[in-house]
Image (cartoon, rainbow, N blue to C red; front, side, top):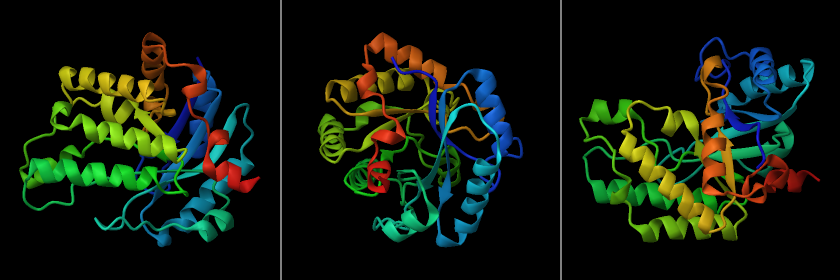
Length: 260
C-alpha cells in the first residue's frame, strides 16, 4: 500500500496552527519521519487570506527539500447556503495544486440532532459534487468548542447517521472523482471521541472502501508533533485491505488535471 503521504497540513501563517508550523520546520520534520509526499493546506475562509497563501507558496519555492510537496488550500463554507470563497480564476492565479474542503460548523443555534446530521450530509455531498474540490475533509468531525459553548450534547455515536446518507455521499464522491479524507488528528487522535466512536468510524471507512471511493490519508497537523500520526491510518488501511490504487494523491485530482 502507498505509504508516507499526508495531504492536510496547516502552517503558522493563518494562525490556525501554532508557531512550530513554519514551512521549513514542516519539511524537515516530514523528512525526519520518512514521509514521501505532503501537501500544505491552510484555510481560505475569505479572500483577504490570499496574501498569506502567497507567503506559503514563496516558502515552498525557496526551501530546499528532498520530498514531494504540493501547494494546496482548505476551503470552508461562507454560510449554510453552501457558498465558498473560490473559483477557477483564483485557482489559476494562485497556482493551487489541489483543493480540500468541507463543513466546519453545525450552523444551528438550537440543538436538533436530525437537522444537524442532515446539514452535515447535505454539505458533504455539496463538496463532493463540486468540480473545483478534490477532497472532502474529515466527514462527521465536529468542533468540541462549538458544542461546549452552545451546550449541545456531544456527537459521539456515528450510528445516528442513516446508512443511506453514507451510501449517497460515497456515490456522489465516486461519480465526481472526489476523494474522502481519513483524518488522524481530527478523529483518531482526538481525545473527545470515545473508543467506540473510533471503531464505528473504521466501519465507516470500510464501507467507503467497499463502495470504491478514493481515500486521502491526512494528519490535519496544527503542531509539529502531530506530523507522522498518519501511520496509524496506514496500518489500519493495510488491515482493511485497502488497495494502493484507492489511496488518493494530488496527481489524481481534478485540480492537477486542469493544470496540465
